Length: 93
Length: 526
Image (cartoon, each protein chain N blue to C red):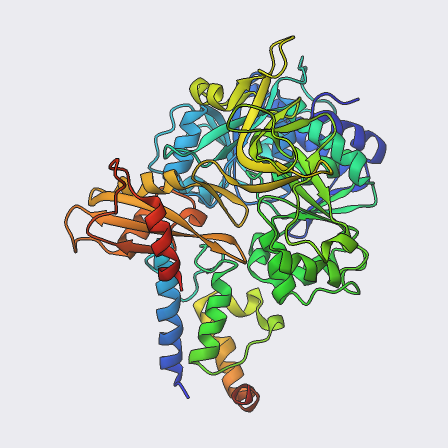
């Protein structure tokens, strides 16, 4: 399982790659990914697939909400809580 | 019968002053409040020197103030210009200067975006909130300034139905956006047809999903206000989260929904949509792009009591044809027609021999009637190319709008959309000229040649890929070019993929061989 540091770095790497495609170069941890257009209606599902494939969590449609995905910090908090609290459930998916 | 748009508000406010007119981000306005605030804004604009026909820009994210600003500008006799709050400063500046915006209604953070822009036509700025401390441009006013103006009546205005009401900028093939001018009559022709067709009533709760610079919002705002219904402005970020959007539709008990199909496809795939949740929903309208049949069929199954309509029309005519989805026929259909002309509108297809196309034949769709735009702001040449004399009727001079869309009529009189005559594409319902993207790429000093192509996509219509040949091979990266594009075009026009090559393939006449590029693109997309 990823350590906290690795997890955040992984998420950041993916988000920054997407940000660059939209012409955004700097993405602070607390920057709104939706307001800045980095994550749009297609990007959100790319991000979800990335997390499912690389971090090993299963993310339900009802979890794909603003509170969990607004910023890099939110995503990390959300994914960490899934890894800690629902690790077994996620692994079985 | 109303002949200018603001009469819709005045009449509804007179009959239903206490009803809620607008909801946006938890804030609401009653009809009386909307009428009074827009009166005050109109008086303010007049005092700042706005005269009939002057342009007023609206440059801020959706809020209740958006609707006040639209009606306030109209009541002052002005033409409002909704500006995409997510566009790069360079493009906004171009639009401001192109149509000579005199008054700008904006928010502090959007104004900051224009810090380094030269906009000599702008004489004053009105902020949608209070002035903050620190440096403020001269002639900048806080929203609270409106309180000093009379609320009971709007200023004197001698207006006619052919006066311009608003200008909507769309992508332009030569690299610059073009301003489609729309009159009160253009909008009302559509609004009156909708009112009758869809029977919008005071108890309706009408969603507003489209941005205000997109013509779908004309239905939302004006039909809702005409019916004294309540307009619910969808918070922008919900467009990204289908589960949250579905919750919002359920919670707000939306009865009428209008959006591009891609928003509905996302709801089908990830919104847990079902008839029990959307008990109040009675009508879904969609427009802007082709709805993938597979998802439309699923949506229609999921919502068994909702009526569905496919609306079609370029910004230049708003909506000119419609098709009511018939559940029993839909199952066996492999494509959906764009249907037949709305009331007070006529459409026909003109074939390559300049004859009106018959059943099953292919032609370019032409539109006539009071819904058709008077043309493009400041561009009589383009106007003359697209709005042509009606050569099929010799009795008097009138204009036809050439849509550039290839269509074919069937034996029932319904038209089918087949494609474009030019390189315009749709992505998420947005109209995009590939030429504008190419111009943005070519404006980079390191780029020698560039071509943009569309990659068909089931969910959003098309994705954009570009092929770029730099002057100096190895000197450019895709990311650098995407960043450059972000300063010139809206986000939805930035190519998702950029392939750098040494040179672009050419046809025998020396033009870029787009057919060959289009063939290579599908391999690259996989």
